[in-house]
Length: 489
Image (cartoon, rainbow, N blue to C red; front, side):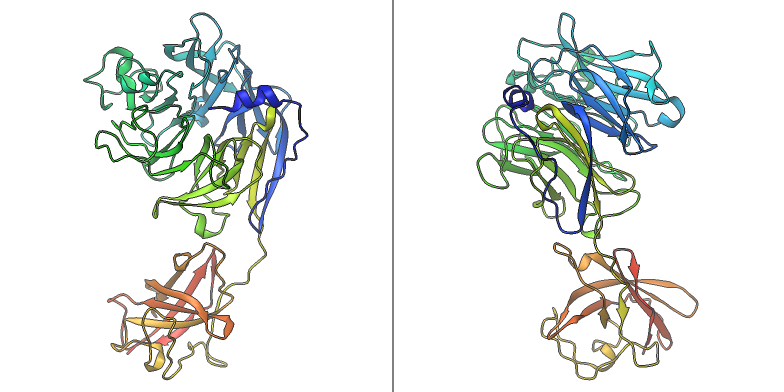
């Protein structure tokens, strides 16, 4: 990570505006007053805990930064050292355990993971319990890592930088340049990938070959983990976090064909272009309990770059990235809240803040399937040919030749947003007994010369009942249409 060197040179030298450039329909609310923030975590009750590099763990509650810190820890904050990570125990609602990653100020300097017990918005005095003492550091003050998260398996994962000594990343004799996996009581799981190869505390190694994995994230509802590795001179990486993987540093950086190493899922270069950067920071999957953003964002991975000040989305299905926000002043962390908002943390040359990004697009009326006048029957057009289809449909009643495979619907108020595809639209049918039959959406597109009307082609399942009416509806972004009656052959 490179944020401190920039901070030292530019602190107080500029007046920075906080507002980022966001896509249409998105707005942000900013909470200021945080000194040199490095990481954040959202508690199960919605509070946001923010690490300040100097050792204070701050609390944002009901949209306001509390004046009293949760805890103030004595840390070595020289260079990229300091208070660098925070996580909540999976049983936080019961045990109130909060974990932090910080640099110990006494000699020998090293990074530590400790557990504190919460009492409301502050820690219980004297509740610190050190659960992980990492390897001693050299005089180099950079590449400390610091991200900590509990995985879906209930284990604590710890990202550790190689302390500016590249050879550390390729050895099982220390824990630098690695992602570690431990139990919350500090013991080491016996199913760790190198448990029988490494010895002692090094059995906690879960992956290796990393330079400075400053941020990583787990995808909710899955076992998938993405690791962001800050590169040196050429490439920034998003890596697939898989047990036992070696990501190649310092032998390789960026995409590699070397079979000894796991190549990144995505890498972007350094330079002066709008999508280049110098330090990947922050990662969050958009799979919240309550979806607020357009459905095209579901399953995407948000990531940011410290130097270039942008936030982008990575699509795991296609391996491609797309722009989201620009003008973000030194972003260092990203989180998605249960309410579906995206939160980004900006160091902002020392005068840091948390921004809550929400989607407040215009209220869109529910889709309406066109039906015959004074009827609930879907409009059937004889000899319709829409050459924009992936296939021509020319049969009556909107059916394909076999009378049941495909169905063409004409829908009003069904407008895809930029970046959305047919996958944003879902469809279903019901029979008279209210049995539900999911329909596959084959095509969504505007009817030529009728921009207010959208053509939706769906495929019916083989078990759709015949010789009786069925009732079809379509949905987009949580809005469901009327039910249009279709007579099956």
